[in-house]
Length: 74
Image 1 (cartoon, rainbow, N blue to C red):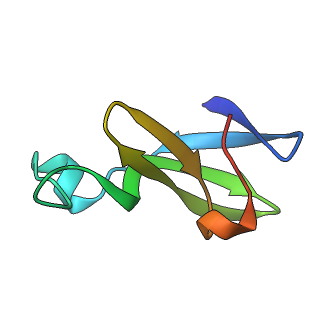
Image 2 (image 1 turned 45 degrees about the vertical axis):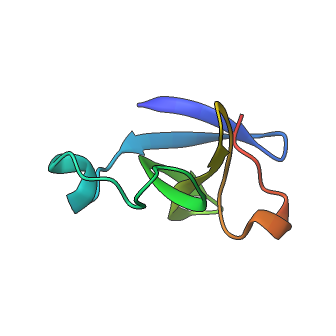
Image 3 (image 1 turned 180 degrees about the vertical axis):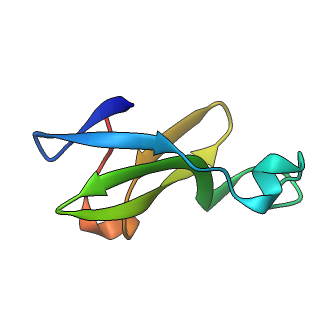
């Protein structure tokens, strides 16, 4: 398993693709968006949570919860 950092805590991560990932589909017509689900989940405070990405142009910010919660994945 991989590890990531969220709010200065090291968390475990696992590969858990959704249907769209497994079948090569995109979640939006352009592939960009504010809440694009990734194929990664992290265990944060004892609960497995999906990692989302706010992605526009060629840069993205990965987070868990809501973007406004400031729980960024490093």
